[in-house]
Length: 257
Image (cartoon, rainbow, N blue to C red; front, side):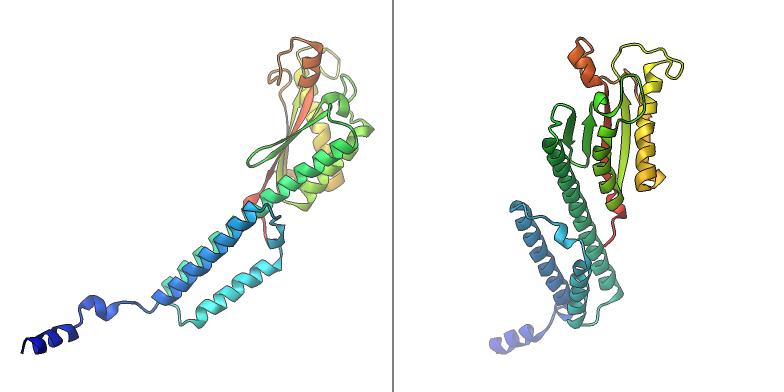
């Protein structure tokens, strides 16, 4: 009799057993497995330092499209499940966009370094890589004659390297003009401030004219003598303070594949 009662108890299903697992559970678990596999592969590629620009083509969209088809083949998705999957897919794409753009920026910095080395310009141009940007700093004597804002012919190959990158990949560029603290008083430049602004503007106009970069992506500012990189206490340091800084930042949110 006891065995009969136990058998009856076991045959009774709780409310949770009636609804679990829900029909979307297996689709969700498959999606979680796919995502985990993707990020494992991505982490492996990063650790091996494999260039990630291979993702920047139509194959990425095809991969995600096939992923969607495979998921849908598992069963009809509810609207909520479709929304969740779309959000995850968008997040995945955004992460890849960021990685690809930063990889491109790193390659650009390496190209500039190669250009500097090939042309023996190590004493005139500095390249600094930040987490989200690259700064290229040519000293003013490389770009301009003393006290002038007209570009020297020798400076244009470097500007062409920068312009080529900006035209090919969506990026913002900030051009900063700097001087030392030696006073300047000419009819054209009453102070160092005007000189620094004029030099930054000359470079901006060159890039706009030669490479037709969108105006909203580029800006020129002048700081005169007020943001020195070194103390103005020697001829060598004053020469280093006479400089133009190109700060290049990728436009991550506007990259499209």
